[in-house]
Length: 86
Image 1 (tube, rainbow, N blue to C red):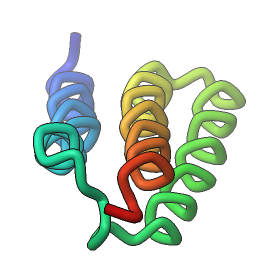
Image 2 (cartoon, rainbow, N blue to C red):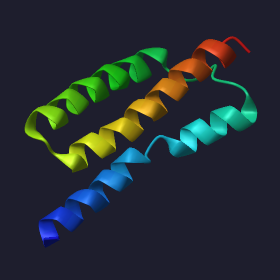
Image 3 (cartoon, helix red, strand yellow):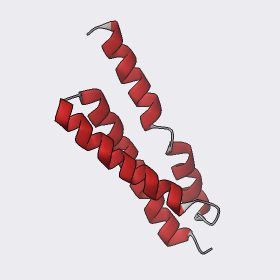
């Protein structure tokens, strides 16, 4: 594995987990009142586009990163719909 590959995987891991603190906080507090649904909808659409692109160019770093980001965005959208009115 080249240095560029290692950097790509490391950067992808950091990017993929950027939403985890928000997911955990929202889950623990059972409140998403101050969360922007629009932001997470845009992020979700963005991750779908990046995922398709990753498959088109057969880039595992892009694919893995955006699978995790898509999952995190989807969880936050679900939390917003479930806990947003509290």
